Length: 406
Ligand SMILES: Nc1nc2c(c(=O)[nH]1)N[C@H]1C(S)=C(S)[C@@H](COP(=O)(O)O)O[C@H]1N2
Ligand SMILES: [Mo]
Image 1 (spheres, rainbow, N blue to C red):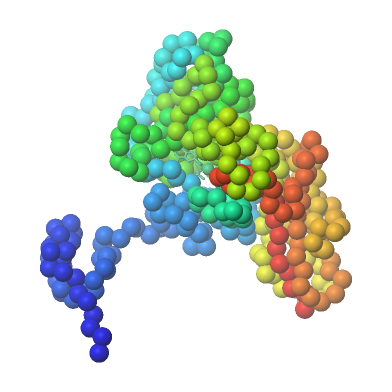
Image 2 (cartoon, protein in one colour):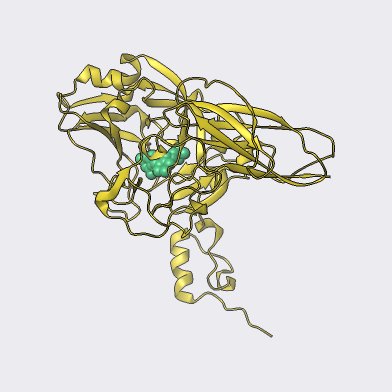
């Protein structure tokens, strides 16, 4: 008979100390067992996410949607992906939240309370598409380190807040300003209070766009904590890493911002294409700006089955960074021929666009439906994984679903 190995006395007494009361029958606990009281809380419950969301990492928390979960025109919190680089701030006192504007190129340093921002500046609402630069990373070969996002690190929520440009106008920006960077309240995984997990920025022109917001609401409610409560920068159409959560400081810089995750291979790709696995010199890497054209079939779920002779209604969204999507087509013959989908206009600039089509299949059997969007400048999605890069960014390959007719 195999004997269970039980927890050691010393380990049991330290667990008892942490839990604070006697663990009755503690000596019966199997070796290596973590009492539920000490396990991480259920992330689905903690972040109010749907059970079909997929956890990619718990330290820090990272979670993505599946394509069919993103069917809504405006993404609800329960289907919004989570990308954290550090620890979510705790014990936020919203009544005392402030944001300080500083940097070499600010006329004078100024601090606003959240309340002042809300009362002093006019609010605006926009639907904005936020896609993680690493969405689609899991398909690169050789593989790239980092969260193995498939297709679900993208969202299109409605954000409400004040325009960054209105605030910068109020304070005054010096002539030599080139970049606007964020600093936030999340903490580094190492616990080092002097280290920021991430501090990125955008060129001044992007910061001054009408749609660039310091937002305090998402979908008409307070922003959920994990998505940046109580104040978040939103720069639609750019890698979502430019949209800082938990913002408490904005720096107007006289040079390209050099905070954590701005340099090296972070959110940068080779300026010129390189071969898979190639080493790229630092000076040959360029910062990702507008995201490339992409689309997602959100209905039906891959694996759909239909009866012969029946048409299949498909639908989804397409987006193209700073640009509008000009057309979207589908193929049922592995990209041999393409048919047009119906494409809607965006709710506003930088929001994703909805498409739909009615697909007929010639006979019984296995099919794939592929979708391919083209932006206003004529760039189309590649059918398979595009240019390899060290961190696996910008995979905008056509999305595909499997369909069985029979
Ligand atoms: N302060 C802060 N802002 C942040 C991050 C972070 O870790 N800390 N992650 C960034 C990255 S890489 C992405 S993709 C988006 C994810 O936003 P979401 O979690 O609200 O979907 O937030 C960005 N803003
Ligand atoms: Mo990201």
